[in-house]
Image (cartoon, rainbow, N blue to C red):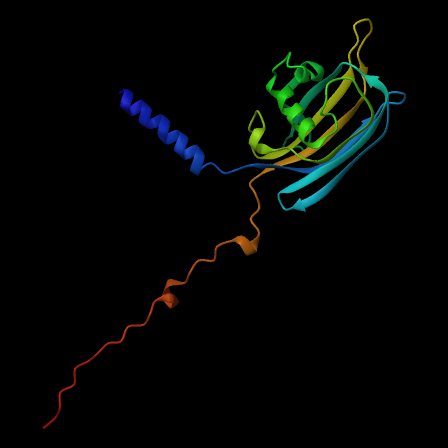
Length: 212
């Protein structure tokens, strides 16, 4: 019985590895906003790299130091009526705690990984002055949750948290993402060989009798 159970587990793992299609998260649009007196000159742009990848360039000026930044992360999925509905993820992470290793939320760690690799948010709090991101995209290899095929909206609401007064919004970032099977360019596809024309013709020797 145990042997059968182990066989089924191994078979499932092999099936997921070889039969389940790979999924990429291609950013199709991006929007960002700022909040007067706290942030300014927010801009977001997309640069297409290939059929499966587009990267974002983002800039914003922090006009006041942000000493305790928290980010509200929400994910929405577009339904059959073309409306975005809440989907699985709705979490709040304190990025200063993540950076200081006082919190180990998988979503916060993923966000911190993006910060370190693609932005100048790659240091401990506070944040102030010109902040930017270059070539950022949603890396499917390290996403905490694998999403089904479809269209999504990833929303980040960063805000400053205070001890003595309510939180203050800093702005918002919205990634519009398509979870899809990677597109293979035609020039990279393998052309099947026509076996009817690729076989080497064989010479048939027919014996002939000499007449008398």
